[in-house]
Length: 154
Figure 1 (cartoon, one colour):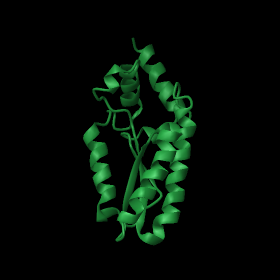
Figure 2 (cartoon, rainbow, N blue to C red):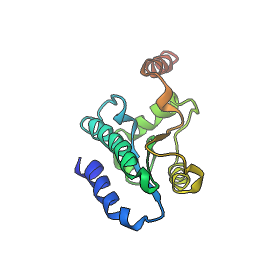
Figure 3 (spheres, one colour):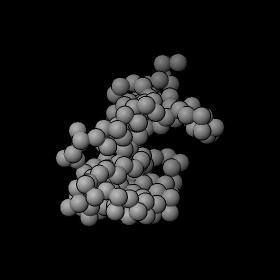
C-alpha cells in the first residue's frame, strides 16, 4: 500500500505546486485491481485502492487542470520480469487469451504514457486505460476454454 497508493498521493502533493498551468499525473496499475488474478494475492486489493485513488485525485485536482490517470498494463517481458517464476507461462497464457493474440511490449506502455502527458488527452481524467492486447475484455471462462482446447489438441 505504501509503494502503490501512498507514494502516488505523496508525489502528487509534491508535484501539485509545480503544475501551476495544469498537468498530468500518470501511474501504473494491473488487471488484478479489477479481477481476481491467481497468485496476485494482496496486490489485487492494493491496485484496486490505487485505481480508486486515481479517481479521487482526479476529482480533487481537476479544478487546477491537473489530470490523473492510470495505465493498466499487461505483463511485459523485461530483464527484471525474466527472473520471475512462471513468467513464461503467464506470457503464453496472456497471448492465448488476448484478442490480439500477442503480448504487449514496454514501448506500448511508454507511448500510452506519452499520450496521457500530451494535450491529445486533455479531456481525460480519472481513467484507467488498459494496454494489454485486449485481455481485460475477455471472460475468465473463455480463457479456461482456450487452455482446455489447447490441451485437448495435443
